[in-house]
Length: 144
Image (tube, rainbow, N blue to C red; front, side, top):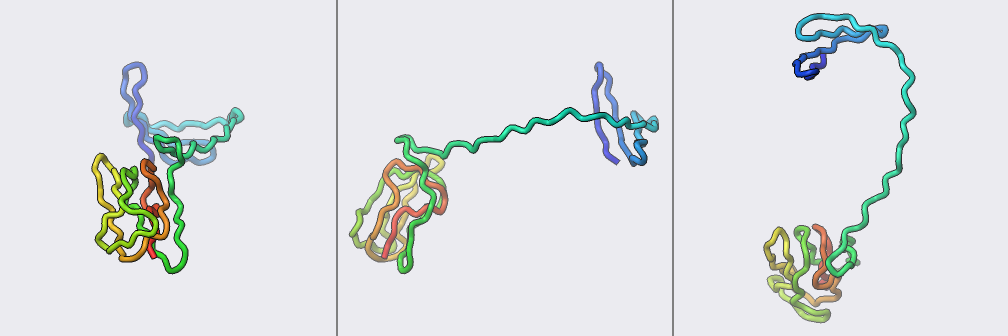
């Protein structure tokens, strides 16, 4: 049984709809039972409009938000731990980094977060630019 509450012309109604058999519905309105005959009506045609996908999010500079990985075998990517904006890049391609080296600063939820390399090695590629918006799991740079 499904229960509904209606207000019609300032009056409150509690309506419970029970079983429906052969176009007869068992309905109770404010505790009074009724048998309601459901008449078949021809439904108006429904028009469905195709919804266009939303435009891809963009950074302040107009560049697209970066979200796809770019790591190949034998390399490790430093990934964004959460969505945010790259405020600064602290390394360049070719730099040697230790695991605890801060390689980027990510602003997320109005806080600046230091992103560490996580692995010692040489920076092979930088996948983002300063000011880019990134999603969680986005490759920031690649270390080999």
